[in-house]
Amino acid sequence: MSGGRSLDAFDTTIVCIETDTRVEGWGEVTPLGANYLPSYAEGARTGIREIAPALIGADPTQLADLDLRMHGVLRGHPYAKSAIDIACWDILGKVSGLPASTLLGGQFGEKVKLYRSITHGTPNEMARWIREFKKQGYRHFQLKVGDDPDEDIECIRASVDALENGDSVVADANGGWSVSQAARVVRAIKGLDVYIEQPCQTYEECLSIRRRIDNPFILDESIDSLGALQRALSDGAMDCVNIKLSKLGGLTRSKLIRDICVQNGVALTIEDTACTDFTAPAVFSLALSTPEQFRLSVTLANVKIAYRTAEGAPEIANGYATPTDRPGLGVTPIPEVLGEPLFSFS
Ligand code: MG
Image (cartoon, rainbow, N blue to C red; front, side, top):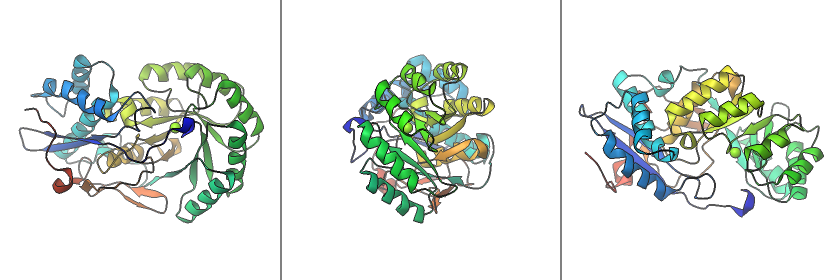
């Protein structure tokens, strides 16, 4: 992504919560390296060590109480809380016999549309990758831009040329442009049907760009809390919000943000920074329980998963994912892949 940030491997932390009735819940957090959001893999584990002792003896089905308990022992660090929160939703689903999507609001449709991220490349390469992914059934694309504005303008134009009726594309700068660079790009692509996502690093810079264009506008990195969302809604700062479960602290807080966005007519991209087979069903459950007209798209950060960590992950085919109707997250861990826990509390 912008700023030369690239990753060739991800470090995931998987949490299992065991209850006194032998029900197990599973959750996971996988930061997108250490220089994307204020999160990093070792920090997730350190945060979990800090929080876990305070949860022993608590009822994992009382999610609001758990959220307060976690906040009571560790302020901030939502990504460290995310895996624990997701595991408790898994338990709630298993105890109640219902899929997480039902508990999160109920199902809208049967499957969710995925988007495909297009890595930064030359204009010709990016257009070619779009055509190739279209053959696999993808209709919604996200371009990684945010470096040289002149190159980015050409990449956006070439990518739009590769689209057909019914396709859509987002130019996601991941905060990489200065205000003047972003202003040049959006002026040059005026009239093209392109969503603009997080053009600049800060909220104020993004708002400045938002106020001078009429393209649909997405905020991602800037919406990291309820307070940030409230401010952005009152400023009319975006048309869509990108929800990443770990950015907000798990399913409990992501559901709250999702519901407020829907009530305010704001559409959503739903995903997480990265994941294996535990966060994937959590992402798809939140997406499936979001009314379809508010679901811009969903993805799993397009990472190739080197290790299957659980059986029963949602099926992905033709640009769509089909979430499970099994209780909770609906996945079964593969013990020989996971190995022994790094640490445990009881
Ligand atoms: Mg983004």
